[in-house]
Image (cartoon, rainbow, N blue to C red; front, side, top):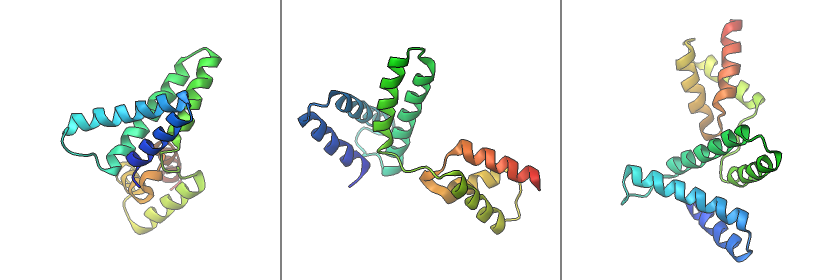
Length: 145
């Protein structure tokens, strides 16, 4: 079952349970997916990678909104929305796993240019990569050599 189908099933379940918060978040995700699809080609379904990119983008929008709100109650609502969205994203690699991926890439290549190695590490980790964490660890690693 793909991400889009899982979101649709969870949306139906939330509607039956009358969970308005979950329903509104899942509808927003579906709206974002449909908007991205219409930007590319309305008659062609988005592939799984594109859908994951849309969901991740929506999660980033929510995180940015949470930073901008001074009201603690509104922040709590946004963090609850983020928790719902994160169920549909792949698990991010932790610092240890990221460091192992950097070591593996550096062991297989003689290249030491940040951009080239960064691209290889992100490809190695796939969807579980946290770009900011990879960047920080890679900079430290390349500076130490």
